[in-house]
Length: 262
Image 1 (cartoon, rainbow, N blue to C red):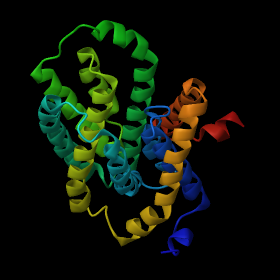
Image 2 (image 1 turned 90 degrees about the horizontal axis):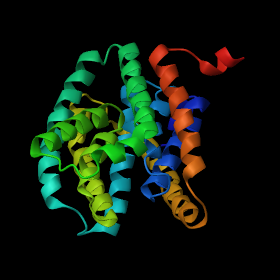
Image 3 (image 1 turned 180 degrees about the vertical axis):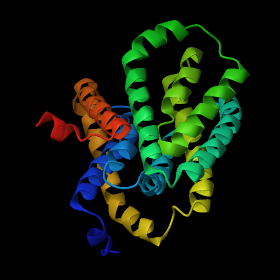
Image 4 (image 1 turned 90 degrees about the vertical axis):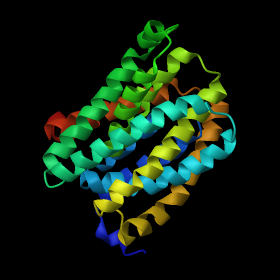
């Protein structure tokens, strides 16, 4: 297992530790959404598909840890609409990954676009809430946003914005909203194992790294609970989204921002 330490450069381990810690913090409910930086950040140091594959088992285990808190608190009707759309999106992402797997530049550009789109979504979120408030979404919209979420989630595990757009207008109780999203991503992440396995992205080398990083994810969850009780996530989220913006620019244009700033 510990041969994995020498297989990857130090930059990878720094990005991996930061990414997995943020995933844990996000799963604890602090700085909701900050976990989206994980794949883009790791894609700076290793191939995009490998970064996504390393994180998938950690996300699934984290989902099961979170789902224990929301056993029966979810909206079954919404899941019946969103999950079929997500499966379509996962299949589309599967084809995209398979077709462009040999073109790392295209994959990194795709991750960069998704990262910047997420930042734009967060900037426009307050206005979006006002626009969507009181609008009852249709089944067709649920399928569409589910498909978009499945596609984005397959490429970079950033499928939350489309689901937020669909669920927000329904004014669900907070625990039902959170529980529904957790169940949705638990299901979609499990389904994503199929294309990842077919593309040969899941292997023993990945498993050893996942086992090494799991304790970090657990500590991240504990840290998230602590931060939830003691401070606001306002400035923390701004810092993470600022970092996500810079990461997205670097992935999209293939430039080293740190070198440019020098």
